[in-house]
Length: 202
View 1 (cartoon, rainbow, N blue to C red):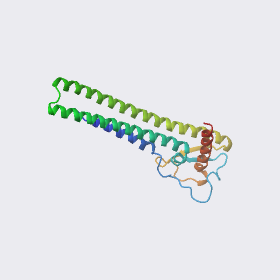
View 2 (cartoon, rainbow, N blue to C red):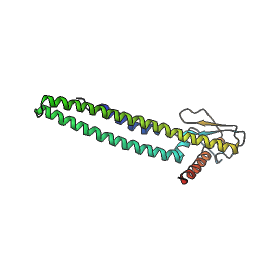
View 3 (cartoon, one colour):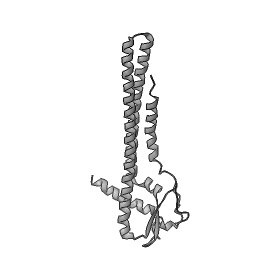
View 4 (cartoon, one colour):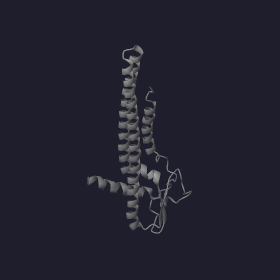
């Protein structure tokens, strides 16, 4: 009878999902030097940029959804750990009974089959929860970026920028940029205002 090593690996995989959520936590790649306020120099027709990693980490909606997902992942991990330990204890109890000759061969075969089925059920359950968490993570990012895109369209109806470029520390496409063309803080403030209004309507 195998121990629940496979299940333990799945539990760890679920826990790692939380770490994936944090992949936007790198330091911003473009600094905002000087005393110029972000967006102050940007005018209609300008090509401006937004630091996505910095924006996401300051966006209240993302942080709220991330906290909810982390909490759910921790709950699932605790549940899987509890189920795994119960199963492992039952396996040990079965092995001790067999070694001491406390059950018949027929009973041992029946219990071994039952334990094998339980192990498979537990593995299937862990895999299902892992898939669910991955789907929820994907939905989280889609919701965040849908809100971002909607806000940028609305904002640019007023600002009239020629182009809004996204950049992040991992794949930075802007080697040098005027700090006045970095509208990250302005977009963060606007997004958070929109999010506060949305929360108030709930």
